[in-house]
Length: 134
Image 1 (tube, one colour):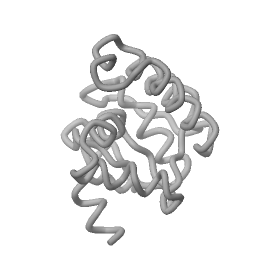
Image 2: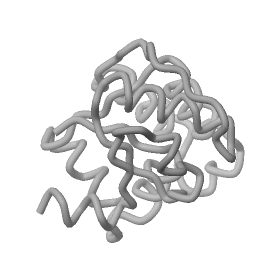
Image 3: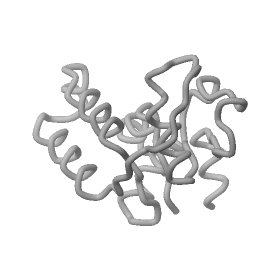
Image 4: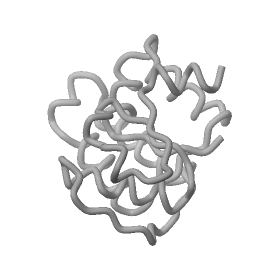
């Protein structure tokens, strides 16, 4: 199954492998799930993972290996749908890519994706998504 992961879910899954985000990250690693990204999403993942804050959790080398993994093992797309009016405009690339690829978006911030702007895109919390796939 293909999906878009909001950055908060990816990072949460890396930091806490026992919770629903961690189970999603495990399913990505096993190949059960396929991450869909565009250049904007990858750029955000990279910027967040390279923040000094994460040095306490992952070595620089581990973070660079993770970035390489995401770069090589994700499916790229170019978003052709444009969305405006989201409470947090920086979330637009995630919704635009999900709508373009016709895949669900998994986020820890569902309130940032009002249903009237999401059209037919399925938006799930990590726990909801785990229930869907198990």
